[in-house]
Image (cartoon, rainbow, N blue to C red; front, top):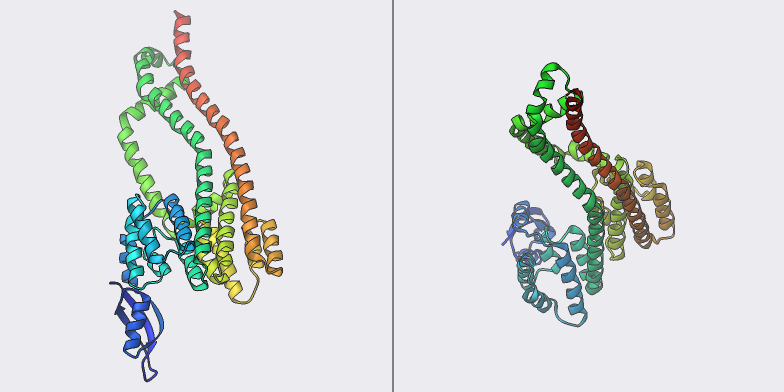
Length: 402
């Protein structure tokens, strides 16, 4: 049973605060009211949140999308929520989802609202999903919200699959090219070492062959040191990229990298616009929607720009002006947001912006990949050609001298 922190007033009106063990916020409210304590704020204690995050299970997005859609269909058909969760728990074969649904169903059976039961599993249900479910429960349109969540989840998975699919072949070329060159240097080149010793003593060995033999000897003699150094560099970079400075550097690099920077920016802004528009369409207030949607960008620089815009909105200003002033959002996107704010149609325009950016990003990504493939093939050909030329030239020289 988790602990909840509360701020309240007692029967005499004095402000009090403390911890109470309860199954849900509603259970905590009932216990405090029975003691004639009138809560002003109830939220889960940090220790309980940490424990829940540690036991939370990660569920593949495609299974979650199916769950949202099926739950919406059952509710729309008149099946009660608790019975719907029980049916879906019984029919799912995905272990992580089955375990999560079991815990969610148990919490709902104890009187917890669905969104509170889902918040206990942050690795399965994102803040976006929980906020939309809360809006649907409070507004009485939970079935429609669940359908929309399913559509958004499926769309995000489709975009992720497109990006991964486009990069599979270039990554295959990189892996194969690295393997071929490594095999040549480690196993093929050393067989010629004895042949070139005499030419090396006479100083007749070409510079390319000398460089190639030196690389081969270094790899063979010091590969374990190189492997240790590589692992240390990777671990060090991982730790640095987990810091605020590392995240900021990587975010700036992503947005400004040649070729892919424009695609990364467009996809990040598209995710932000889609999540923000979807939240607003489901009745989530703009400020809360912005705080949730900023994390959908996956980029610290863009998230900071959105944070700054949120502060401006709190002060009574528009959304478009601070986004434009940040210099991180395209001018056409800022102009469309400004017009949408004036027309009071921001949520629908944001979805349209997301669709346009995703279509444009898909075309640009395909173009970058088509350019990248011949470049990688050319680099592989140059490296392999260098190896064979470096080995062939001294052999031809020695044959000519003979």
